[in-house]
Image 1 (cartoon, helix red, strand yellow):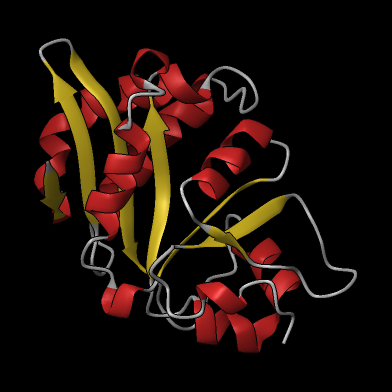
Image 2: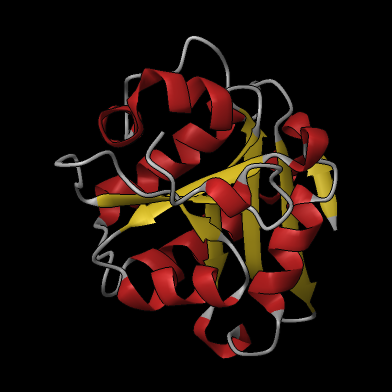
Length: 185
């Protein structure tokens, strides 16, 4: 199921519970304060252009969710954006990421993994990405997560020489420049 804008706020408690379940353990190890900040971020993120949430729900609750919005120009400098800019350079950021759908969170509870939940959430949330242009970033140290995105057909954008840092940027399988993502041009 997918919700656009603030309609998802009715599910805030369940989303925070899922977020905590997924991100409190390794490799993320997020503490209580970061988990509380997610709830605040969710409220402000719903006001972003193109905000949407896809979620997988069973009788037991939310098994997983994804949030996304359209990346604005100028490209932000907070959160992980500075690391993205450092690796890609301004020209590639503009060409590949600005006005594309940015997948901000993907969280799948352990019991729902290996069943296609993450794949379905990514497909649903990116289904109407402008011209197929969607992207996400993840921590380089999250090797299982990195392997999952690769297995799902997402394309890693190669950093400019000497700029590799703690994040990896991936383009969606349908992104028109996904096949050239490894090019450092």
